[in-house]
Amino acid sequence: MYVAARERRYLDALRGPMGEAVQYKRIGSLRPEKDGRTILDAYEVTYAGLEKPVTFYLDAYHFDDALKAPMGFTCAVPIGLTAPPPDALLATESLLQLAIEQGAAKDIAPISLDEDGSNAHGVLIDHFRMVARASRAASAGGTPIDPKRPPMELMRTRMVVVAYPLRCGEKEPVAPASIEIVPGQGSAPQRQGELATGAALARLLPGMNVPAGAVAAAFAMDRPRATDTIKIAYPDGGCGSSNEAMLALRYTNAKPLKTPPPALPAGWTAAEHPVLRLQALIDLDGAAQSIVYIGGPPALMDAAIGAVRGWTAEPARLNGSPIVTPVTLQVRFGS
Image (tube, rainbow, N blue to C red; front, side, top):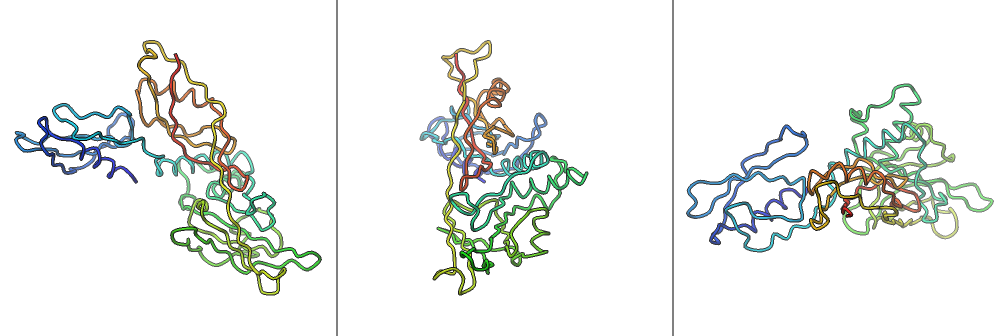
């Protein structure tokens, strides 16, 4: 998502050895054989007076704080690139595999639509929980899903909002009439298909116990955005004067709890201030999962990943329920 813009920003900061303006064009990409995941983008770079163009191979999937100009070039301005946010594509792949693995082993409760966690108006099943439910059902049926080869239907991002009938004292519960997501900004996500009730809801969420009269809506998103509001409408003459509920969402970020720095391996000194950067998922229990190296001295990668496996965090939460979130981590080594 960010690669092209970050590469251009790096190249735009470069000049020739005497300050000459640099021209560049991308000429392709190649994938090294070493790890099979790193893609190098090739750029042909030249400036006035250079005998022949130079080829740069840029790795935009790893980051080092000490960015430099290549030999024979200078920096016109500070490069000024900060560490990138989590790689969305990598996070999506890791989340899918983690949901399959953890869903096969345990039931995961849905998220309340109510900020107080009461489930009074219904529940939300985010994409992680949707995949976990499918994995749980497949394992129970004797056909477990291979996390490395998930079926195509699980790769489609989807969440489901289930609205419960509204209870009004001694009256009969009032079944919902519609479910919408009202955006605080941007466009409203479109519902996938019709509202699901009865048998259709049972097919959408097999094995899930919901009150009679519940209604469900599916949306092509992993979870609501922080500024979204869930709107549930009820028929006129429902409970009181209002025939709709506007349910705001309460997000809290993940917080580190126990993050002891790893000791420096032999041959390194504290004066070198080595920092490793990793991407991971903080799971529902606050543990780091799917840890991937994204920058810093490669020789310290194994030590950093080993240390992070022992770290703990308070997971991010939506209306009090834990949610899986991608994070980038800085691992600073102690003396």
